[in-house]
Length: 73
Image (cartoon, rainbow, N blue to C red; front, side):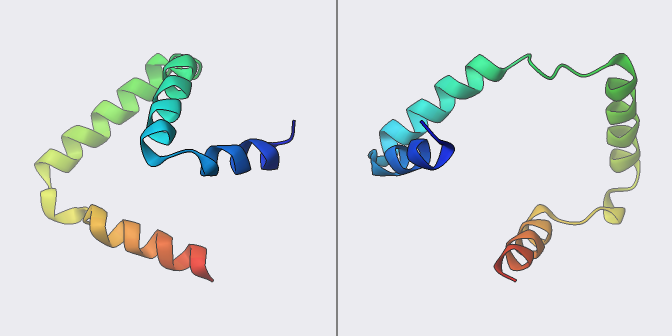
């Protein structure tokens, strides 16, 4: 079965079943890509920096809109 076949079947499911399936798949994949100690330290450093300087960041809504616009091109 190809990826396209799976997506076609997925899209035929009601939205509730789609969400349930995604949740089940996510649970199975959880832990597959665990972060290294270095990656965790970097994320902690970035979070501290963001809290110290909240005005430097870009609001999620703006980032999302930019991504969606880029996808439409």
